[in-house]
Image 1 (cartoon, rainbow, N blue to C red):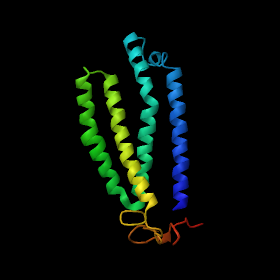
Image 2 (cartoon, rainbow, N blue to C red):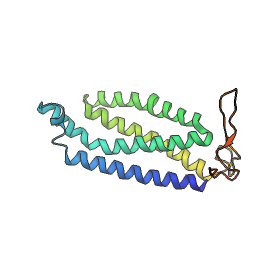
Image 3 (cartoon, helix red, strand yellow):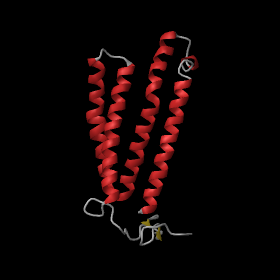
Image 4 (cartoon, rainbow, N blue to C red):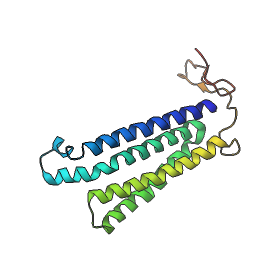
Length: 172
């Protein structure tokens, strides 16, 4: 379990680095991004306004995916799916529409509300990750998971343990 936490920390640091790099690039090139698509000054101003939301959106979506995948591989895939369905799609998407309608529309308002929806989903995923990675009780990841066997075709089952009894990977 400690190895999984180390991988999660490393992946989280990588996500922050990549989001910061992409955000910095979008910020530095914000006045030139529109020229990649057309020479319309309205499109150029719109892309410049949206560039402020690229890094936070990348970070939130990536963190949600990271936490969601951890929940899925730790046997809580149904919870991860439920969080994404309810928090992001059932609440976040309608709230995004309502926010944009409230402020008079526009793609910037949509991006603002969509970023908040991903923030809510990331917080929900993060709370579930922290609860599952720090507890071994009901709903948590057990301290020892036993051997996990990969199944093969029904005519020739492949019985190779993917994890040792202590939760570590098998070698070779």
